[in-house]
Length: 191
Image 1: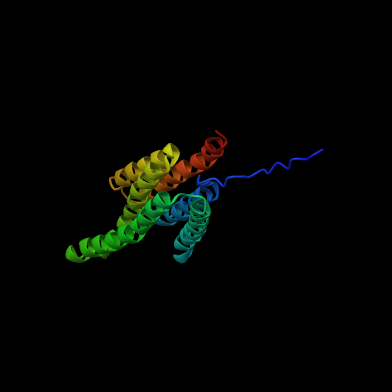
Image 2: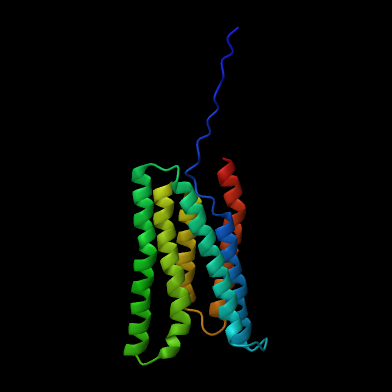
């Protein structure tokens, strides 16, 4: 009897699992912007470095998780998909370079350095939203695309909210969106 060996091959997925990244960014929004809201409203006395420290911790974690997941998915991707991912990856650098120039220019021209306090968080969220829209389109990921759309619209709307409410809105609507996306990502990947 000839035994035929069946070889089982597994194909690595090119789908990016964003759950860890979404949770890192949710931490940044909820705790970073939430602490800024509490501090600026005078509700809680805290060191001035704490809100930005919490924000930076979550942003760093989310960025590392997002890059790791994207690089892992690119290993199994076609050359065209890898090229598209690299191009949209460059948008992070160009988007934030343009934002730095815009925020610095506006606050300098109008001699209002305090504008940076709202322009950086809102502008960063708008840039992230636009890039998520591009990533969602490239990856065929409607959840990522819709999260980007929501973040962009929320960030633009927060510019109408005065005082500490600006940070509270980013914390609740931005952080909440990331938490919801992390929950929905499991269902998206299972489908």
